[in-house]
Image 1 (cartoon, rainbow, N blue to C red):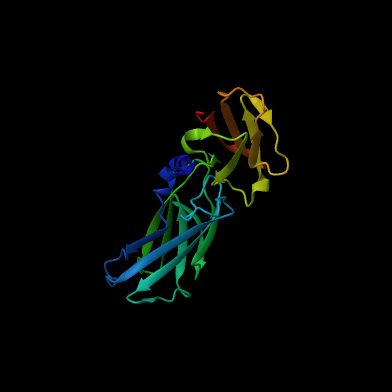
Image 2: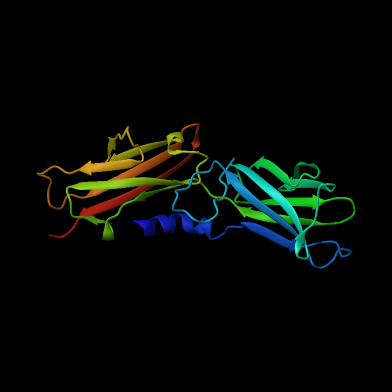
Length: 230
């Protein structure tokens, strides 16, 4: 059910740092100057219904940009030298380098991205960005985890894998301990119950989802469904 999906991804979503804004650090600068860092992830999976900012997972491709708001307008930075640091390690920069591309680290829960404008201005800012582990949720549209039909349909919804589409993921389903293959739409599982199935026949469904090009990135989910009371 959707409440299960929200419960699983909400802790990470609550910690989003989509936009970092800080006053200029140097006292010689005007108090109304602000250094703004924005960032985005590239090629990280999330369903279309997910409206929050997509946060990075280990080794995600990322892109960040820098701007300086001076009063009501943005200051030109084409002639300014900008240096970028990821977790205090220099990752690039140069004259007018307002944009930087990089990969998120593989062993962090929060990363820091700092931009410094050199040349005596003292302008700088640091964005603190939460990271998320890849996660998969089984969406089961059955109130109270009970079903009243002979066909049960489930869907795997992955979040924060480094995958541009579902074809980059491997979905391994099992029902009551038995492996089930779904070659045409591997993220979907349809269970047809036999006509002679007991009235109290319960379903214990397990799902393991793995990134095909890196089995290190995986997540598992389980759900138990029971027939509705007659």
